[in-house]
Image (tube, rainbow, N blue to C red; front, side, top):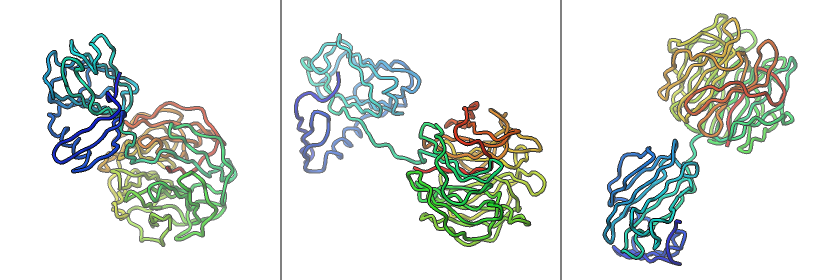
Length: 437
């Protein structure tokens, strides 16, 4: 039992007149506005700390954030109430659809029904404002509304692309918002390996550079539907074994790599329209086969790689795309690894070649601090790709163990790497990967 009693409800007060439909939607309004009215109501409540327990004894005049992530919650209302008493309950983590709340009206009526009736709310993102009327109707929901829209910060889907099976390829594999890798999509653009990829424009992506049999600087844009475009003429120093990440929330940067004979530290910025800029003078140690990811919601980090010897230093990227000097390395020096964002504002480096293949990972905090090694999970390998998916999670995929592989490993929004998921699509290594929305 839930919802607004009656066909329509009129609210008056403070110069405001509003009519609500049975679902709580505003039908007509005048005066200061309905939003202001509800703001006044909610603002008049005393908001309590987040409730995570399985029971709650509610007090009139309070607002409660109810977090049912781990369990359902039974809410007992006051045993006595007066006309106009108000209590509000809000789905704190959008989980009432999984674990509901149940209201015990504690001897009083609820919408005219006695307390033997079962009252449950089981819709994600629901907000319930109840007001006591009288002994006949008892508690009545003044507001029973679901907030359908949720702000998005991270892209929901990912894409692995290009690489080598022993021969250069250009096929791609989409990653769903649940972390499921799809079968091969026919390749578009020049087949190549050891390229890089990153997001731009908030919801699109770009593959760039790589080895086609010679060094390349061409790029391929990816739409926000995951469609890869034909080649765009290259800009900047042609090279392979570089890395890329996003910065500034809607722009990207390619950096480092090998131009065929010389290790590079040059970078190339990508605008929020996907346009690649000419070379920016390199900062930090020139190297190849490194990885990069975003952190802190709008900044980036390049890390690890080889100068001929494996290294573990990192270089932070500001939200204006400026690369900083070397930060002393943390964790096992290695190359041919991958990195991606998780939890919206953190990152993870994982896998790679230390002289032998490894599965260790290193978390990156939202301030760009790299943590010591986390014991490897899943098949040790070199040359995988990694991308964000589902907004706040990540995935490592493909690579080389002693043979080309296509398995993947999901990364939770707490940065925990999961065991191998059976591979989908063409087994290969030296892929690029990035997210799109």
